[in-house]
Length: 311
Image (cartoon, rainbow, N blue to C red; front, side, top):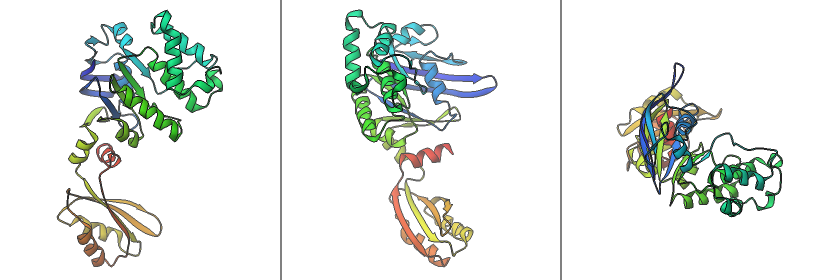
C-alpha cells in the first residue's frame, strides 16, 4: 500500500496553491507533512482523499488514480480533516455505527468495530452522550474513531491532536505509531515536537513547493545552521555594531537578531557542525564592550529548520 504524488499542481482561480510537487509514502511509514498556514498542506491532503480534483499531475493510492478510481480510493482511506465532520445531535455510538455503514463495514462486524474504536480512542465514558455536549478533546477522539472505523490501509490525519490535553496527546501519539507499523499514515500538524516524536519521515512545504524531505535526523544534518549559539547581552551596547562583528566571524554562517527584551538583546548565531563558537563570540562581545547575560550552545531543532526553510 502506497501513495504516489506526481507533479501535482492546484490552482484556485489565479492563485497557485500547490506547485508541481512529487513524493511517495509507503506502508509502514508515518509521514509528517509540515508547512505554515497557506502552504498547500490541506489542499494536497484533500486531493489525495478525492475531496478536490487536481489542476494537473496525478495522485495514486495503492495504484488507483484519485480521479478515475475515486470510489476505490475512498475504500482504502481513513480521513480526519482539519474541521471535524461530526453530527452534533447524534450519540457517539450511533454516529460510529452510521459511519461504519457508510464505509461499507460488513453488517456483522459493525458493533465490534464500533466498540474497538471506543476502546482505543478512550471514549467509554462518553459513548452514550450527544456529540454536541462533548469537550473539544473528546470531539477530536470521535473524529479519530470515525477515520479508523473501517480499518483503512491509509490514514490521512490533519491536526489529529488538536484540542487534546498532554495525557491524551501521548495516548493518540502511541496509537498513531502503532497504526503506522502496518498502514500508510500522513500526519499534518503545527506541533513540531509531535513530528519528532511520531514521524519517521518529514516533508516541509512552503508556498506550494516541497522545500525539504527526509527523516528528522537527515534534515538536522543538512541544516545550514546545525550548530547554534543563543547569545543574550545587556542592552548598553551598540546592537548593530555587535551584529556586524558577529557576522565577521569566519566560521559563522548566519546571525539573527531575535529580539530586544527592553533590558537585553538576544541573537542566534549559526555555525558549522562540530565547531564551538563560544570563545570567539566572547571575544567579539568584549571588543564591543557588551556584557554577556547568557550564552547557550545547541543543535538545530526541527523548529529551527522549519523557520529557516519557511520564513
